[in-house]
Amino acid sequence: MDWFKNSRQLTEHEVGYIQGWVDRISVNFLHWMKWDELSLENKILSGCLNRLNIPILVLSPDGVVQFCNRSMLNVDITSLSWIGCNYSELKIDESIRNLLVPNSEADISNVVVVGVENRIFHVNEYLIPDDDKKKKLFIFRERSEEEKKENILKENITLLTHDLVSPLSLVRGYTTMLPVVGILNEQQSEYAKNILQNMDDLINLIRNLLGVERLEMGAGLIIENMELTSVVKKVIDTLIPFAHQKQIQINQENLQNNHINIQGDMILIKQAIYNVVDNAIKYTPLKGMVDVKVLDQNDSVELQICDNGIGIAEVDLPHIFEKFYRIKINQPEKRSESGIGLALAKLIIEKHAGKIGVKSTIGQGSIFIIELPKQQN
Image 1: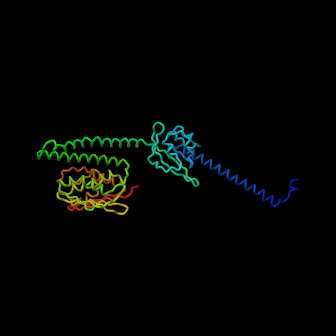
Image 2 (image 1 turned 180 degrees about the horizontal axis):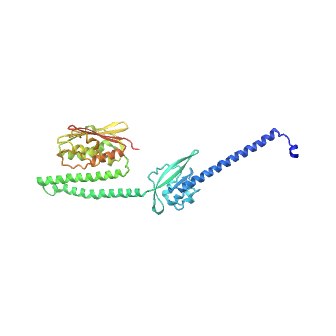
C-alpha cells in the first residue's frame, strides 16, 4: 500500500505530542467513567432513600437544600421543590426554617415539627464531612402511637396527682385548724392527730406511686444546680415532727458548714432522700438515733443515713428496693408502709446515674448509702 511504502519514523517531538493527547484522552475517559459510576451510585442511593418511610433532608454548608426524599412530603407538601434552593428563599414553617440555619450550634434534641395532617416529628441532626466543611443530614422521626399514648398517660398522671392531692391537702388543712375553732379533749386530739398522720401517709403514697409510674415510663429529669446539704436539711426539717413523736434524735452535725454543689432534678432528689430518711425513722425504736451525713468524694457525693433500729434480715436485703416489698416483722409502728418508698428512691438515684445500697445487722440497725455524680450528662 502506498501509504505504508511512504511511511516514516516519527520524530521524538511528534511522539511526545501524540503521547500527550493519549494521556489527556485517558484522563478524560477515566473522569467520565468515575462520573458515570458516581452518577449511578447517586441514583441507587437516591432510589433507596426515596423508598424509606422516614423523611430525610440534606443541607449544604452554605444552606442549600441538596436532597429531600419523598417521605418529606409528610412534613411539607412542597418539600420536593426545595432541592437546589437556599433555605432563606423557602416559604416554610418557622420551626423548619430555624433547623436549616447553616453553622447553627443550637440544640435541636427537643425540637418538634408539626407536619401534614398534624403529624408530629422529632428531628435528629447529623454532620457529614465534605472537604473542610460539613453538610447536615436531618432525619424526621414521626412520633409513634405508643409515644402518643405515653404522652397522654403522663399528662393524665400529672392531672391525677393534682386531683388526688389537692382535696387531701384541703382536708389536712381543716384538720389542723380544729384546735383553733375550739378546745379538743384528749380523745379528740388523738383522733385529729391520727387523721393528720394518715393524711400525710396517703399524700406521700400517692406521690410515690405516681412518681414510680412517671419514671418507669421514661420521664426526663429537670436538671438544675443545687446545694445538696441544704436540700437534706429541708428534708430533715419536714420529718422532725415524726421523729419527735418517737423521741428519735436526728444527728445533723456533719451537715454544719458542709456545702457540696451537685446537678440534678431537685424535686426528685429531695423525694428520694425523704423516702430513705422516713424509712429510717419508721424502723427505729423509741428514743433511737438517726444519723445523716453528706461526704464529698471528688467527682461524686455520698449520702449516708444510719439508724440503730431493728435491722434488716439477710433474706430481705436483696428485695428491699423492690416495688411493694415489705419486711415481715412485728413492729409497734402505726405509720403505714406501702413498700413503694425505697423502690422510688432507687429509681430516682439510678435515673441520675447514681447508686443506692444498704448494709444491715439484725438488732443493730442499718446504713443506707446513696452515691450521686456531681455533674449530669
